[in-house]
Length: 289
Image 1 (tube, rainbow, N blue to C red):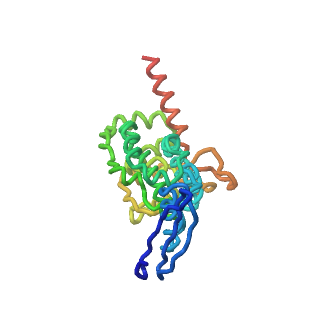
Image 2 (image 1 turned 45 degrees about the vertical axis):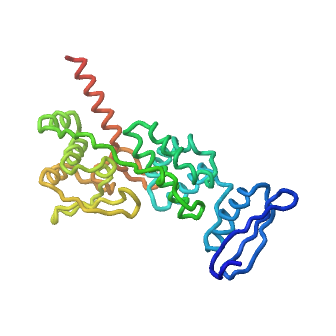
């Protein structure tokens, strides 16, 4: 009998050729946990169900596949993340679901080698975001107690690719772009160029977020609903803001004709519409040459 505080399994063969599982708890008391077809099946039941219970952890979810975990993870993540973040995560998880979606989590734990082999088949520019989303979902499974380890992390590092070189528009190029746009649209483009913000960030700037006296912009809700950061406003950025006519019917600095559902006010700037407009202008110029 093992010493108190030591947990161990005891697997013995029965006269009928089956395998009986007994185990000792922390107090040294012996318990019977049934008879199994194979020795490996008995040991797996001890590791997946009995040992977690003795350690005060949830038992592994043998019935849950990776696709099931993705659904649970995204449902819970949506509480703190913006809808577009959840949509982007779901898209990034499609490839890993296509490969491992039907695999039970308890089997997926031991598939680090298969995951490493799958990762190298993904194009370099897509590999980092797709594998990162895969690792994030599996890490949630570890936190929820469905898994004991993250096989995507065990598969090896997931380095970010070398960033592409960003070419900054010249003053003449920026003027050529803004000449194709109206007052608000041109101000939005100049503001975006001066601040370097993501499209989703500058398109949703609200008047309350601008502190002209301190020359600061409060950017909210970038990654999660509660995320906040301050961005300095340069002279060109402030000059762009000065050209935007003030509106009383919307909280947004750069507005659109679309109405926010349930609010009845003009919504944030429609970046896609402006990109389409610029593309049409570019095509027209090419045809006139």
